[in-house]
Image (cartoon, rainbow, N blue to C red; front, side, top):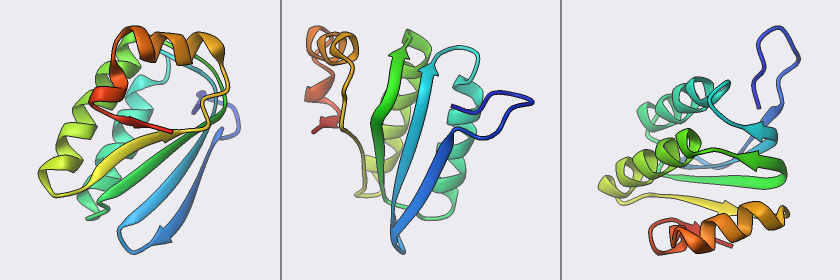
Length: 109
């Protein structure tokens, strides 16, 4: 994701004035949760309403990240927006989302 002292492992693509896609990479966990939270907060403050997280290159996720995602889904929804996830290629992550019923709160494509 955003390891300290390493090159950035997140790419942001602006789709429109209020819509962006974040392409994330690697393990999403406590070591980079703060950076993800700060990035989502920055987008929220910039009046972005729709954030899509592309999980094509994500190979792991922990509960701290799930908390960040749920918090920002609520924040974006409050301003008629949405945080969504697409391209979940990891079987472990997909099963975790299904077991936790995350798809009832966050759109997972």
